[in-house]
Length: 275
Image (cartoon, rainbow, N blue to C red; front, side, top):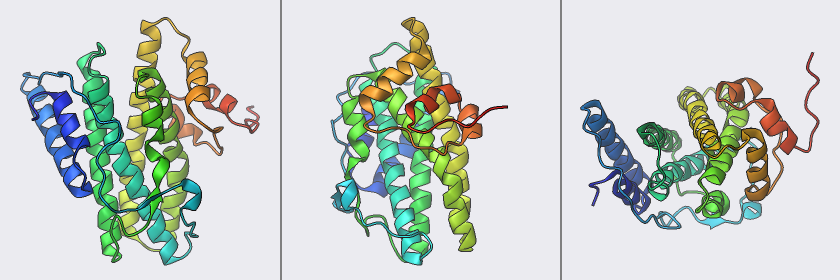
């Protein structure tokens, strides 16, 4: 297995262990980019990705309302936060490889695949960084229960690429731009330099992932002669089962190609007055 990019993506998706999954992800990304650098790109191919990626037996996956809430001011709370971020990053690895495999039959410039393979590679590193931080503190990924709903957006958009781009990078990953600075501050106050450094890497690279979503969403809107803002609002209302919650990191969202008139109308709050 693994002759085409789509087959390599499915190989990652069907690997259960988090460290093994991310090692394979990084290996396949390196293979893809080495072939691109040699001007001998791998065939994209087609494959049948599973509806649900393989997962380790731990952590136990719970309904979001049943996941214990811990205050980040305590050491246990900070460990829970690290565990939650590790869980998000592992899901992100699968989300990006699923994008490659599930929509490999859609005609795109090769840059589409470059972007999502790069994003998957970076998310793999993010997961490993979080695991390293957990292990430094005597814990590990799987030690605590985790959110069972993380894959819902992928299931809901399994047959709708524009819906996937709108909800995953442009809503869910954009949310990471809003909350990560606060997390960095929590670990800075705790004098945890390793975690601060890891979260700063994640924060910087997530801007690019949101930007990939915005770029290819706009590309498809151009192809189908759709108004990007109107189509984004329609798809988010259809697939995202909540309103968007401020405060928004407007600077980083703008850097990623998301202007305020994309997300403020989907919030139940009033946007700030602009002078």
